[in-house]
Image (cartoon, rainbow, N blue to C red):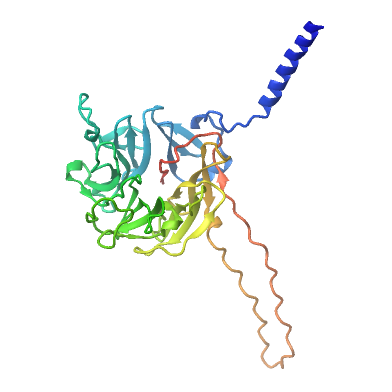
Length: 384
């Protein structure tokens, strides 16, 4: 009897384990390599080549297929376009990071920064971090988020520029970060000035906020222990503190700015706003049901690529939003009354029949990948 009960317990426990295993979520499953996925049919229509990163490696994406350009785990991240079909990229290590120029196949062309120190130097201020490199509008300088000045283990990031091919010692400090916020990141150089994401505690010092900030000249020092830039020569905000906007991306025609905004929630919306070179228009929320990151315009303006999880808590996937999803449709022409015939007394003419209005077609974003874990802090680069 006891032996039979024991056998029954073994089989029932195994059966229960297998049943529960079949009901477990796949959210925590390890991310697949981009090159192992099946091509998406929709991706065959995307123009040009996209560049993304995952697990420290750079991948190109064209005609629906990924190609691995660099080895895994090397630390490549935060890409940006560079003339001649090349890339700017950050190579991150345990104690510092540097900016490089790469060709479109991932081969190093030039190292632009040298942020390390001698092996026996244990001073934390001797090594530096460079993030979010971006070429200036006139292509003579590199803008980046750089951790200088810093104070021991206090590492506020500020926006710096340095000459292409020069040294950071020749650089200029463009923004002054608010201490203990993470600092200023994501510079975007334009003909009229510089846009970047500034973190602060808001005008009323109520909590951490992100805003798009505009400046046409380097900021002036304003001391320490402030929670928001004081009035003066410190640039100006383009978005409100409560909107929580970041990651600016300008359209190919220079008239529309894409960005993400959180509105003090746990979701990042895709927003668009008109741009006239100095100010942003009203924000239009295009996507509000996803955790959107890194919106990037197609080179021909036919849509926007971005990163977002397909399932809550899962890795970030590549998505495509066609232009029709955020461009108002062309209105239908109004019906025209018939033209009277000469010499004929017109009688009462019937009113033109109204054209029945069809409901607007809802254009949804297209998921281009599945089961990946793309780097949501690394901008997408989209080259023709």
